[in-house]
Length: 128
Image (cartoon, rainbow, N blue to C red):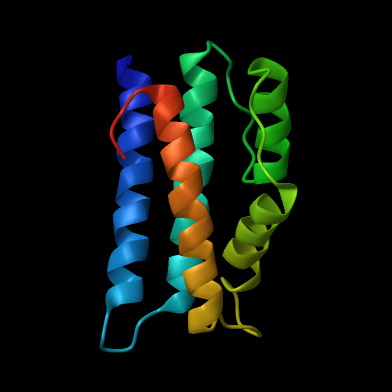
């Protein structure tokens, strides 16, 4: 794994740790932050995979778009679009005033991110 990919992975792992720390917080957990960091973890790992394949990822936060690029690069890559849309929606919808994530939404975001992280980690050959 080259240094650029390692940096993307390190940033993704930071997001994953932050999301997990926050969902486990007993004093005023920030479920909005859990959703945001879960999405960010997956986004950064998807970009790390693309970079590892010598593809410069677009400047986007759209996991569905990144998924399309992964599918065109890795013929055996598949992932349910509903999961990606859930993470995208949760990361944007709850970042601003007007709506807030509940515990159940945060748990679902972490669950999806955890499984996706494992699959992406396998493509990058690192232990998740």
